[in-house]
Length: 273
Image 1 (cartoon, rainbow, N blue to C red):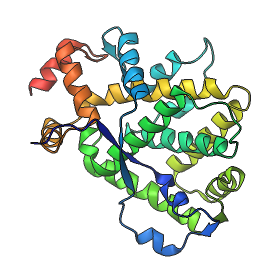
Image 2 (cartoon, rainbow, N blue to C red; image 1 turned 180 degrees about the vertical axis):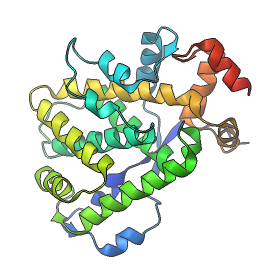
Image 3 (cartoon, rainbow, N blue to C red; image 1 turned 60 degrees about the vertical axis):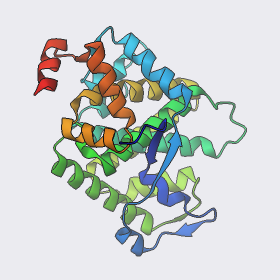
Image 4 (cartoon, helix red, strand yellow; image 1 turned 120 degrees about the vertical axis):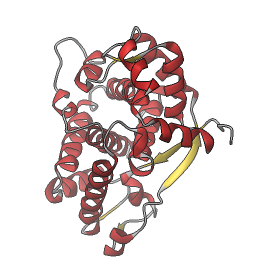
C-alpha cells in the first residue's frame, strides 16, 4: 500500500505540439510512438475548492446528464454549447471537451499580455488533462465499457497525429493549428472538439474569464459525475498504488451518501454489488 501524495496525473492529445520550442514537422513515426505522454503534478488548491463547491451546488444529487451540467454554468436561455454534450458515452464527451479546452488555452498562449491567469483557468486545464489521463491509462475508473473506451481513444489519437504529421507550425500557432485540424480531421469526435474549441475561443474574445468559468464548472461537475461509476476492483487497485483523485472523490461521495441523479438509495445498492 502507498499513501496518496496529493498529486494528479496529466495527459493531453496536444502533448506532441510541445516537444520542441521551434516550428516542427511531425514525422509519421509519431504515429507509432507508445502513449507515454503524461506527467504528475500537485493538485492545485483551486481544483479542490472547485470540486467541493460543485458538490455543494449539487444539493446531494450528482448529475449524469452533461447538458444539465453545462446548463447550470450558463446564463439563462443560453444553450449555444449544449450540442457538444451529446455522445455515445462519457469518453467521447471527455475527449470533445478536452480538445476544445486545449484549443482555448492555445488561443490565449499567444497573448502573454492577457490579464487572465485565474483559478478558473487552472481548474479547467488541470481537470481536462486529468480526465484525458483517465481515458488513456485507467478507463476502468470511468463508466464506459473498457474495450470501447480504448478503441475510441486510439482512433481519435491516430487521427490527431495523422493530421499533425502533415503540417508545419509553432506549438502555439492557433490559426494554423485550427485550420489544419478543421480541414483534415476525419474522426467525428475530433471534428466536434475542434468545432467546440473554435466556438469557445470566439466567445472568449469578448469574455475570456466567462469561458474559463464555464469550463471550470463543467469539468468540476463532470469529475464528480464519473467518480461513482468506475469498477470497484479498479478503485481498489488505484488505492493500492497510492490512490487517484477520482477514487478519493468516489470514497467522499460514498460516505456522504451522495450519488447520481437516480438517487442515493439506488447508488448505494450499486456500490454494495
